[in-house]
Length: 576
Image (cartoon, rainbow, N blue to C red):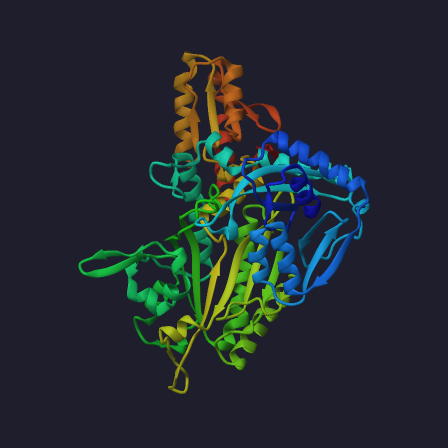
């Protein structure tokens, strides 16, 4: 379908030059160098031309050519981008023809005829800016995105999912619910947590800490900057410098903001000689790191320049690998399931061709990962050769409420940093040995996880996590003293309760509360105040009737203690 798009564009816009046109998870795109910007009207015209091309039932033929033949054809068409693409291709070189009118360099495979494409099952979605080779110093291009399916019904389902994704967009919800913002005045990719979002973040962090203490971890706090020599020793300056902010000079020493927490944990381990009896050591940190992201890739909370990783490192003996990995898998499930993520996709990445470490250690580490996954009972796919040069890893993706998969947790063995920093422990025989180091992040980053979680819930957070759990709505000024007293009791019990003091009519008070997705609204009139009660409403169940104030306090307290999604009153759950 991307070739059909490119042919249609060049037929309608003869000055347009094609670059690359790969497929994506939901369709395809093609980058063009065109003198004028494409408009919505242009997209409609291009789609009509694509339909005409499809209906002509043109054959697609794969042809092998020599480098010289390909170069001659490209020069004849004056396509400089294709020349650069050709220079990077290895033999054999192939191209695809579309009828007798159009061709492009391509490895394929493709359908044999445009009649196999459904003209009623594709759509051109948008135009966006891009750079040649993804480099902002090179030519700016125009990228046309499209999606293609086998049937119109599949296309309609895709459009429904896309609309649902827009409804759940964490950037819109973050503004509507007053959770966070990214202020241009302060800089791109830097997150400002507003009070409501900060309250939620604190709840997440507290739960994370409790879970780690319960699982035998200790917490670390480490600096945000370090002398540049540390990043030279760790290798980050050689392999990761493009993602690091520039150095700053202080007292004749050069410092850099940390892009990762790992070297700080390694230094902490190296601060004293360890015994095998101390291992495993489990250290965790909610550490804020800073990485340079290009302007075109930053996206809400998903890609930012300053973010907090839930990093942990386990230093253990070789024979402890399997047990420690299983322990990490169990903790991962405990934490993710608390936010209603229970469907996972697991990938095990093994030794690449270029790697460090001897065969025995790699085999032991890989078998430890396999053993832990088998003991856990989780199905997984093997990505042969997909591991890092310094160790095998497990990647975990979570599935959200509308079926999207998100990369989340990573468990990575590392033979590199212990070697670079000369980490040791005293073994049982008195010899000095290298510990095994396990990197591990469950959320990945708090910011990104918060964005994923917000979209998963569509902003309808479970009761225990909602920044404002109960909003009291006094109908008249006469009942405000009772409302104030009830709010004070709720707050004393640890419930996040507020009062709407706007004085609006009841209907508007309710609408305002529902728009802010507050789990429970409590209407208080003269009858409720006299009886020491409150009439409850929930977002999903509507009017729930009157309950005693003391019962509401007890139910809300219990829900918080159990991290429940809903209140339970009279043995009936109230769905927020």
